[in-house]
Length: 81
Image 1 (cartoon, rainbow, N blue to C red):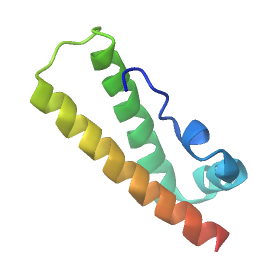
Image 2: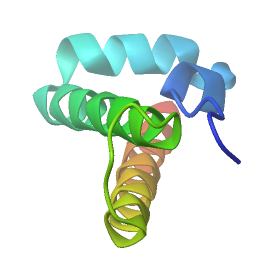
Image 3: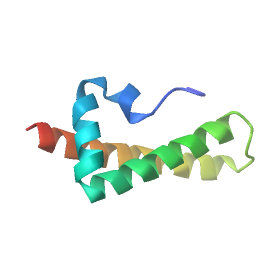
């Protein structure tokens, strides 16, 4: 769906405290979080027509965003575990 919110606080509201803790205390999580946020922003800009790219590039970026989200979610689950 176009322009759908994919920020991690919206995607995983139940992990709000864990997200904050890991961003402050885990450099790897913080780096992935930043990369995810930047990629999500890029995808939204493409979907809104602010940036022009090929459909293939957009799909590649969406797949990368999903991969990052899966990695971050695994880290959140492990932290809460």
